[in-house]
Length: 285
Image (cartoon, rainbow, N blue to C red; front, top):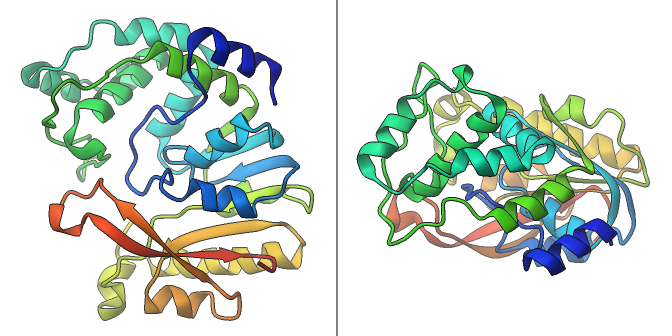
């Protein structure tokens, strides 16, 4: 285990853990993922990092030497980079933020491109902590448009958690890019975890409509090919996705395993609760 991380955890009373809420986060099933991950990993790859629950859990156990984290969301990537490189500036930038509806909408309207990197990260953390259900959503112009959330007393800034996260992130290269390119250098002594945008459970009834999404059927097919190619290269890799006819078709022959997970960050309350997910490996269970 990283000695510095252990010292920080003892002093601050915090372990490395996600500091953002993220739709589809893996806190519910992280123990299952850790059970099948290699005990010793040279480089850990996570090309859909999201809230980073698996990364922080593996870091806390000292399971890898270094990590490569990636995401297509540039705001998320820059937030992680800022917390890694200048966490004290991020904490300072968060100090003026408060849980107030009018204040929230003023912050939401700020152009992140005009902010320094720490201020940009603070803005994202604030919107994530105080926005509706911790969602991340942008409009056709790329502007964040999640409405104000209703909470009793949300924690906007947790300095101990951010500092512990910063220590873990110092072991990671953090990039914004395509998942396939991120994995070009992965080898047999590494480990890859793939947590893509899930196939909607109703996707099989409308392939055309699904194909028009940000991560459509073509991307899902390409991802399935990448997982098989990693297996051919002898790279240990694990993928999670929704349990539906389409995903079972995409990963036929790889013996996907079904698990149940609880989802609580859905904009539609009736769609929260236990759902079926698949775990698929590039190597034998």
